Image 1 (cartoon, helix red, strand yellow):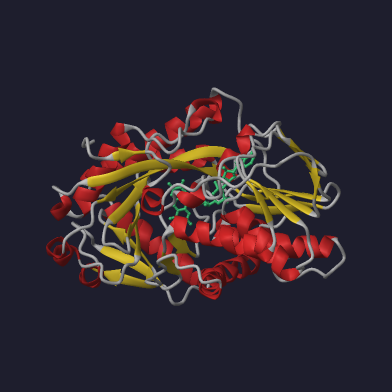
Image 2 (cartoon, rainbow, N blue to C red):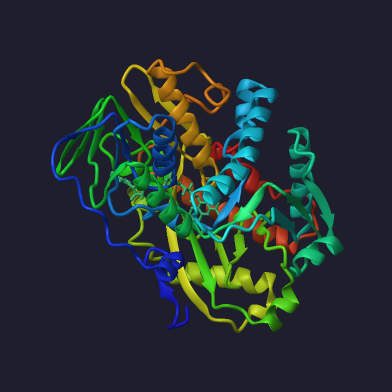
Length: 465
Ligand SMILES: Cc1cc2nc3c(=O)[nH]c(=O)nc-3n(C[C@H](O)[C@H](O)[C@H](O)COP(=O)(O)OP(=O)(O)OC[C@H]3O[C@@H](n4cnc5c(N)ncnc54)[C@H](O)[C@@H]3O)c2cc1C
């Protein structure tokens, strides 16, 4: 790690936008029609759509730090149509149900772009699609299989590109093929979450920041400053859920880390290409994701130390020096001309991983408790679909509307078992990622076109497939 690299400070995106001064905390006991816990994309989008649908609703958002403190202010800015668990939902509810879920996700990418424009939120959105690249024979096999599965899900506009066509888009060392879908955009995560919070507030939603909720009970959100009583309490705390009383083993806080380079000069961009500014990823087991930012940096992320014992989260985004170095090595391996460039910032964040790796959105009609999350790293778009679904579920429950296309999607009210107690949880996740890294190393040096068996075993143990 170079001495000039800022480590933490929530994220690089905040170093550009400035860390906000928190809004006033909850002044004491209060009542609301709907209380939302957590001011990330899930909570804010939910407040947005509910207030738009029923303007007289009294909605309160309680945020422990400030809106966008979590993954919504730290992510890679891939707004794309992936949703965690789609293939499992196909097995549980049938292919057609999963196809409807996929189509809803495709529409969601456009919906986020549409609302951002309508609300005047300039989040540096560029709709260049998503490009996922293979650079080993085993990755190529997985890429082709992935492409075939997507086509079977009706994703007819997803294309498979050879080495030359890939290089015409982005020149990555050793890339043998890629797949591209138009259902994706690059954005600035903090510009989106800040704009969304402002839009929600302008609609008349009350936001209290620096207000951590310690416990959620039916009709009660309890904080050190008072309790908000509301018929509906919606938990939108994703990777931080384990901090809530009774919820330690629900969603595992998985760590993801990122680096951002200095702005790269035209001479370096000439060697890389990437004029289409696609969201860029690869087919490694411990995969990377990257974007070309609006000010011509590369922001690239991947898995560092994946999980902290006891479901702990990081300290304002600080990440390990070894992780920064590992991400820099990936950057330089992909783009050798970045070898000398400065890494301006490194940071990390947590995402929520359910035991079966399936995102869910739920409203328990008997208690009025709702929640959405478990997005496993695909939340920038999925949070928007979750929010519109929570709106429809609440309208249905309160008798204002019937069921809708969204309330019938297969991820609604899906139940999942808890994670194992420690130390099994820690051992399992560490073991899984050690296996993925070993498999990536073995695949990189091998000519075999098969996925390394270590990764297949790790997938099975983790419950991913
Ligand atoms: C480094 C990183 C990169 C990622 N990259 C991508 C990407 O490129 N594309 C993609 O689709 N997804 C990505 N993700 C995932 C995506 O960012 C998340 O799925 C999404 O932001 C989740 O939004 P959320 O509102 O549910 O959770 P969060 O944004 O985590 O918000 C939860 C909020 O709840 C607050 N909170 C927590 N506990 C309490 C409490 N007890 N009381 C009050 N408030 C509380 C937190 O302070 C936080 O503000 C990434 C995630 C990380 C960490």
